[in-house]
Length: 370
Image 1 (spheres, one colour):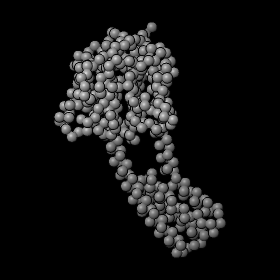
Image 2 (cartoon, rainbow, N blue to C red):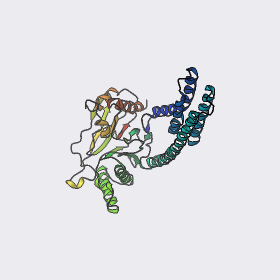
Image 3 (tube, rainbow, N blue to C red):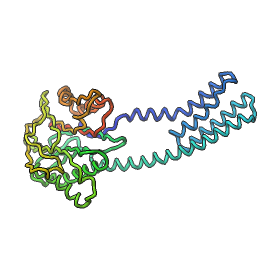
Image 4 (cartoon, rainbow, N blue to C red):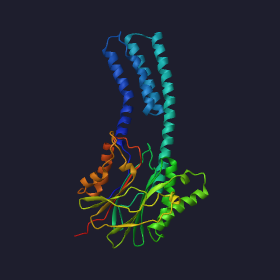
């Protein structure tokens, strides 16, 4: 099945660590009591009960943290009675220490819970922004299937400086994949402006050169409205595609973007651009005439678009990721598996140190039926 999804790694590992953290306070209580009962009275282990409320504050709510603290105090008292301490000063001092730690842990738990609630609200807003700015791509659009991989480099982020879009226009399909210079909210702002300009002009521009010019115009208009915006100071590399219906070709225009890889059978070759245009927002540095390349793209062919987060990913020895070699090795794999394989291989090659946004879009013209 065609895929179109954003991914963040290590979700299962994070959940396992969280569950282990929730179990630790209970394990401390049980193990402390067992060890204290099974060892001679001169060997005191009940002092470790103080760790239970402290650990509970990390993963449990404030009422549960207080509950673990009270349980620690009760168990300390029972162990003292079992030894025949009665209301000895040592027992009272231990109970006072446990009460103080429980109060501090309850406060920490409350602060953490409020922070997590704020983070959950921000995450929910980010997910809405993602759906608006980077809308999910349909699995099929016109004559082609679309498979997407998108991973934002920033921890907990849903969107970054890489962007994409695909729209159905009269007579075919137009696509865009781009990468904004830099990171952070300024890059996201620039990406959103370019996406808006593309969506507004995709079905009106007579050709890809005119569509490329609309991207510069969109940034210029935004800069006039908000001169202090970071977006006016950033540039972006962009790849524009047009797939006309009824013709087994694809038209491409590059604005300084890495060339896509075209797969025909088992052969994989980069698309050659004789004269790539300057990146968006740098067109004023030189007179540029946008040149469109047209290459065959028939049934069964695949075209992989990607950002430099893929091609410039390095291993510990400094070697770049061999994307062309990998794609050639996966030529016989179903199209729906290719980006899953790519993601896993990137994580392995880069030793889990992917520090740039990653976007890859696999465009597939399905084989003719029969």
